[in-house]
Amino acid sequence: MILPLGGFALGALIGALRARMRGGKVLDMLQWGAAFGVILAIVGLFVLVFIQRTAVV
Image 1 (cartoon, one colour):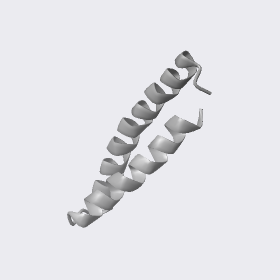
Image 2: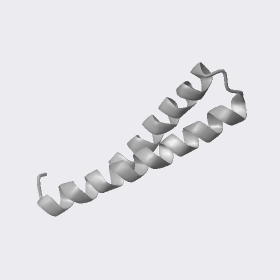
Image 3: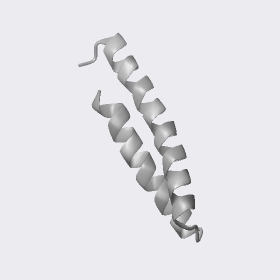
Image 4: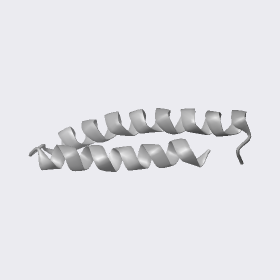
């Protein structure tokens, strides 16, 4: 359960930093952070399902 949450947090941070580097305002940073957060949360969810299905852990 921690992989999607960690992916969301990491994605939000990466997205906000990318928007800031491009000269974005606060709302731009929020939008980029949310978009990257959702993308990496979905990736984390697929990784979690893969790990549980293959019984690696």
